[in-house]
Every structure is written in C-alpha cells, then in structure tokens.
Amino acid sequence: MSLLEIKDLRVTYGSGAAAVPAVRGVDLTVGSGQKLGIAGESGCGKSTLALALLRLLPASATLSGEILLDGEDVLTMKWGRLRAVRWAGASIVFQGAMHSLNAVHRIGDQIAEPLLVHHQASPAAARKRACELLEQVGLPAGRANAYPHELSGGQRQRVMIAMALACGPQVIVADEPTTALDVMIQAQILRLIEQLVADQDISLLMISHDLAVLADTCDRLAVMYAGRVVEEGPAQEVFTAAAHPYSRALSGAFPRIGDPASRRAPRGLPGDPPDPASLPAGCTFHPRCTVAVDACATRDQALRDAGPGRQAACLLVEPGAGTPSQHGTEEARSTS
Ligand code: ADP
Ligand code: MG
Image: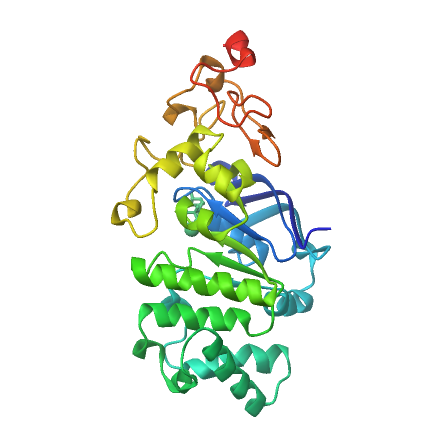
C-alpha cells in the first residue's frame, strides 16, 4: 500500500452555471519516502489538489473521490482526527511565507504552537524543540525571538519548513515553496527540502510551474493540464523525453534552474490554459497543440501506457514508445 493514494479526485468550486471544475478525476500515488512533483501552468488545478489533500478548501468546493493517507480516507475523517492528521500526518508548505506566518508573534512561538496543541508538549520542551527545528533548517536558534518581518524571504520560508517538520509528518506537501524567492535562494531552499525529507524519510509532494525544479528534486513527475494529469512517469524521463506535447512544451520552456528566462511563460506554447468553466471538446490541450490531428478535437484522452512506468493522455503516443511522432500513430491516422 502506498502512503498516499489519490483516487479519482474531483473538486468543483461553486455550482450550477457558475461551477468551476478545477480538478477533474486525478489518480496519483506517493510511496513512503518518495518524492512526487506536480507541474503545470497557473490555473491547472495544482493548488486545489494540494488543499484538497488536507481538506483546506473553501466551503464553496465540492469534492469526490478518495484521498487515502496510510489507508485512511482524509475526505471522510471526523474533525478531531483531521486536526491531528493535519500536523502529524501531513503538513503543507505554501508559497509566500509572509502570508502564512503571524506578523505579531515571534517565530519560535509559532513553531512551538503545533507541538503544544498536538503533542501536548510542555512550554519549555516545545521551545527547545522549536530551537532545534530552526537549526535543522539552517537558522540560528537565537532567531526564535525574531518577528517575521525581521527575516528575509528565504529565512521565512525556512521557518515555514520548520513548522511543517514540527510534528514529524509522514508527508509534506510543498506548493510552489520557492516561487517567491530569487534564484540563488530558491536553489538553497530546494536543497534543504531534499535533504530534510531524505534524512527523515518523509514523502514529498512538491508542486511547481517549473518542470526543471521538479525534475531536479523529485523521483516521479505528474504534469497537470486543465484539472487532469496528462503525463506521469520517472522525473528525468518526463523532463528530458516528455511523451505528451504539453509536457514537452513545459520542459522546453524551463531550460535550467538559475536561468532568469525560465521564469517566463512556456516558450513556443501559444495562448493560455482553458478556463475550467468552458473547456474545449476533445483533448483539452488540442487548441494549443502543434501536433494535433483532427481526432484530437473530438476525442477526450485518458492516460495510456507510454513506456515502462509511464503514462500519457495523448492520442499520438504509441503504447510503450514514449515520444509521439509528428505524423501520429496508425490509430490517430485511421480515426482522423
Ligand atoms: P494552480 O495552482 O494550478 O494555479 P488552482 O488550483 O489555484 O490552480 O486553480 C484551478 C482553477 O480553479 C482556476 O481556474 C482557478 O481560477 C479556480 N479557483 C481556484 N480557487 C478558487 C475558488 N476559491 N473559487 C473559485 N474558483 C477557484
Ligand atoms: Mg497554485
């Protein structure tokens, strides 16, 4: 059994004519100690998926499917159990730590709080542990007395990571943990996360719009488009030899960590992801796809075999062959 199993997860914001289907049937698994990256442009449903994992979505969201954490479905947990799981089972590191830290409390107290609440630690023990956690994330214990505004962006993100580690979670969900940081600091924070999850055998689900960052950090990669996973496989293979045209565009768009151009929109990929409230028929990517054939406009694509341990939702992917050909497969030609 995998530590985290997401089965046919669907999340819709609002209802009726205004419904926004942000996640539309996602299946993913993360093994114990495994690092899964989730990539995709803004609006593809990545954060919605992350928030769903700990049931942190607004009340306007309806969910279905299963999110099994160590075999227990997060979606049907009672509140008391959910509260415990939110720190000790799985914890989240968000983008832009300034918004998640409380400006009027010292950071040591903020790190200690979950230990007091969830571990019934004594104030002195919680304080001591907060200092240890600060040191683990590369900050001097003396910084425990600092307020968030006294720290740099990178230091604040280190504090967020310390908070996420506080109760010894089995899995950390990191949603764009370095996007707000400059490139040098970004690399440092990624190395820190990598080292901590490896040392403490924590599973990692890391979300980024930047495929290069994920390929560097994660074992496996899932690429999301319009609320679905369109490709999934070993991280380096998905990054260097993507099977889905969308993943190929993303990997071409983000050549390297440390390259300032990598912050811009995907190169050679025109337009924007579709509005979830009005998705195109057929493959949702077909209007932007440079290799689409006629059938792509009418046939919705499910994930299919794209080589050992790989799947891609593209009509042009030859089962087991990895990269789609320019000319399409026999199947695509005969149906287009
Ligand atoms: P990503 O993290 O990949 O950028 P999100 O999960 O934030 O994507 O958003 C997916 C879609 O859901 C977007 O179209 C977004 O506008 C919409 N969305 C996100 N949050 C809400 C909300 N609270 N209410 C309504 N729509 C939302
Ligand atoms: Mg997001």
